[in-house]
Length: 497
Image (cartoon, rainbow, N blue to C red; front, side):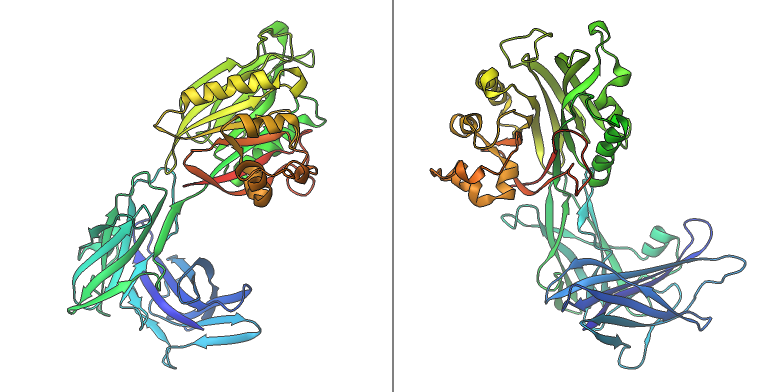
């Protein structure tokens, strides 16, 4: 039910004060979601300690990878653990299981480097399924037991349509270079560590396996048959109409919006009814609601803002885009026939172009249009014409995001479906059968099926875009972050096609 994949015992001097780091990576049979996994260990002081393991990732053969870490710094009152003995523990479905190396108890000498499980002559060390947004290379460390003639990574970034091979290199100074450690490479257990760096550049997903020739025999670590997969986080796009300073406890609600963006690590935020005090038409940047939200976000976070008309007789009202990625270009233009700043049906849309690693060049439009009876069709046509002009062959996706002021199932929504090349991405996730009945295989009952859907806020994506939605949710409801506006706010997550 549980076995050792690998363990390590390293004394690092990189931070000045010696620190002993113990790592235990375990393979656990997955018989239940709820389980307890731990390592019981003792150092040279003879005291047994329990360290809980944490879930890391699924693997093949119906198993999961779990990991436990211990770090002890040398002080005047506390010695390092030194040589370590340990056993493994798992509890699930009311049953406990101990793995004690056939009754001999596992042993790790102080500062020895890596010990491999009996069944694993090759092991990927410190695997992480995540690729950071700015990351261009993927480091891979491989532990090999025995005399290796060659170690290499077989990998692909396009689902194995093409394959690459990167040879690993071996350095006897590996542990000294990485940790200022005295561990030998290879060590007393006959285990050596090899390394490689995969040049993944802007790839969203990389899949790979490790091949080693040991004592003339080919050995693989392919994550128990399912390969290792590391990828970037999905692209998260949020829309919200801020209600133009009409909310009670307005500052607290703007703080809630910022909190959601931070906690959910949202990449792109399109805001409507962004307001600042009118101030005789000159505006008041300090009171701008997009600026107030932006100031509460981790930096760098990029912002573009523009306004179109006077709202509620007191505010400059407009739209904004907040982005974790810098803008390659921004552009704002009126899509309405009226450009009178005293006319609420003067509607200006803001476009921001960004390059998101793993996704490519994206055109994002923050949109607030008039009602169907007040000019929606003319405005939507102008918006689509503009978006089509900007959707060049280098653009991976074009998204129209915001408040369209036409309800699902209404004539305005039907106009979007019938007259444009854009599709409702929230609906595609929330109700795929309804989406197909409306956008892909139109049926007479399509609109009727959406009678309960009161949305007027949409994330519309151009049909030939190279993204696909993978998740969606309503954000500012009583059951999630709470009400912050007279609109709910929506989040859609995307991955590359």
